[in-house]
Length: 577
Image 1: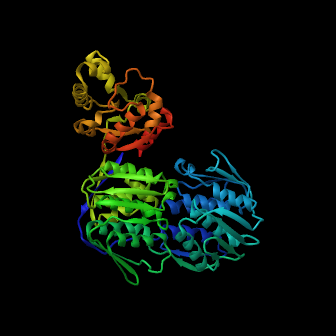
Image 2: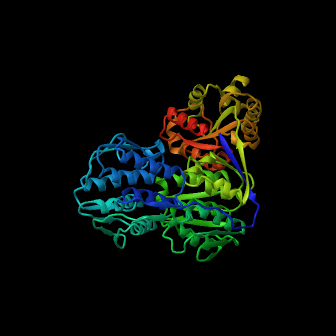
Image 3: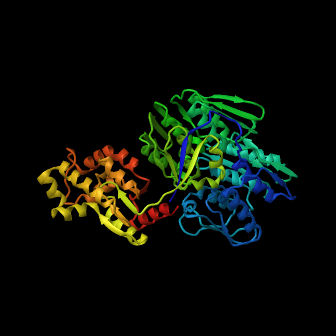
């Protein structure tokens, strides 16, 4: 498992950062240049995993290959799906499992209205799909605008190539409108005009793309992390070649930073952010949802309640980003509350933690900013930033200290509430990893020659916790084990300190309602609270231990609706990164 440690900010004035070209404009420029009738020179194109995925997919489609692999690039999947509908041959479009689980139904439904032949090959509404049509004969459709702006952008980009053009009507409120503005903006740079009727109706007549040369703007998304570092540390960052007239969605993050209290100076070709005292805010980030994670990290250092609204689309990204934010902020001792479209952060004094990135580049970069203020933040799988900003760590090293660590571990410790499946999963995991398995509760029972119920009834919980502490000290010295702990191991921080020296700590988590169904027939169960019902007891225990569990773990795996086999594989996937 790879780790990177971020040190506190070392410079309070920075102006020599090398920020790459915009990912959003780069992907659109690559796509449009493929549709142009003449060769186009593209300057300042971002070199990243996503742009590589787009280039490869376009080449494979041009070469009439039947399998189009888009890696983890959601925007590539959506754009290529639309283009495949007017390209010769039948193509199967697919990506990594994390992408295949993300929705694409609204786009497919829209393309089917135009006459496209598209088949779901596995899960309904998701990749992989097979596209069999090579033309779209109809010219009117309706599409849901509330799920993703990428669906509409995909349709707009291919619209001028259709024989009769395209008229698109949007149901519901269009999400992430600045991304639509970006699409229309770059289309105009290549000579194609779009009629936009207040984001409810779009008309695109048959036209041709054409331009000799196009230069991609510097990326506001990438710059935003360094602006956030300035805001957090009361320092000053200046970044050049950022256009004041840019249509980039994440330019709106500057307004969010102003609300937090930062000073913003806009010059003709540069932006300067100077941090002041942070203050809690209530903000709608529908226009720049990708930066909501950075805002949440800033809010964790801000005493008081910050509410971030308009972020339901984050639940459909590389990971369930709102849930991931809550998990990682909990590790730092920060309480949160979420609804479908919002996240409330109760800021204060966060503590350093080891951050799981969920293979999500924006989580890695957002929490790295916490490390510029809070010494000791460690990022698991730091190389994930290659998706959009491969040189991120190099640039961050100009602001703070960066240290690459190799995490050596010999054991895997499973923690979590009773009934989450630690023992069953532990046995499977041990076999898969070629390790031995030990159940801590069973180990204590064998040594005492009594069941835990008997031990507690005779001597009380305090006595059992002492036995548990002794067992932790003993077992943590072993090598080559998967260890299933008792639910209360986190109550003594020394226990976790023992294991952290040579173990990866995994929290297996499940909703108390699910746990109630699993353990209601357990005759050996002893009550831990005065609650009259099992659900009430489990809910109270979870509330008491939640932050302890999150603070102790390296990463979280949910077992609510997953078999032990699936949970085991998820753990292996995370360990192998």
